[in-house]
Structure formats: C-alpha cells, structure tokens
Image (cartoon, rainbow, N blue to C red; front, side, top):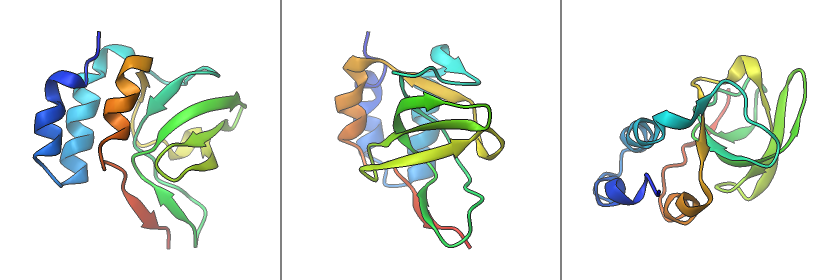
Length: 116
C-alpha cells in the first residue's frame, strides 16, 4: 500500500519543506526504525556536524552500508553518495516502500543548507 499517494495533493499544495517533512513522517510512522538496514530506502531529519558542507536536512536515501558510527547511501535529492552518523540524526528513520519512491521523488521536500 502506497502511504504517500493519499497525501500527495496536500504535499504539493505547500512549499514549506518543514510542513512537507512532518506530513511525510506522519504518513510513514508505521515503519519507523532507529537504524535502517542495507538495501532499504529511507527518509529522516539530519543535522550534519561537518562545517562548510552543503547537506540535505530531509534526505531520501538508498542505504548501502552500515557501520558502528552510522550508515552510507545514495541521497536521491543531491544525487550523491553521503555518510550519516547516528549522533546527527534529528528524527527516527522512516522506511520507504518501493511503490512510494516515485511519489517522494516527485516532491521538493529536500532542505539543502550550508553547515556553518
């Protein structure tokens, strides 16, 4: 079952990325995990610690590797390979089902910021 499709119109009707992320997290609340597994697709709130980098506070990630310090994966918004540390997660991790990926990719809920 696609949990994003029923809220897609509401998501498209707001340009506030914080509101979009809140709606997405609420819709995906039944697949929350503290740590994703390799091969999963997920979204979460992130607050990078590395100064001087641009990063996505609302990443949509295909997880490739797990480590004691965090995980690595492809960020669909940035189209780049990124690392995410456990300590910088600003929310639980929300697992995305394959049938929800296209709907999430159609949105502009990423929040790219420069870490100072």
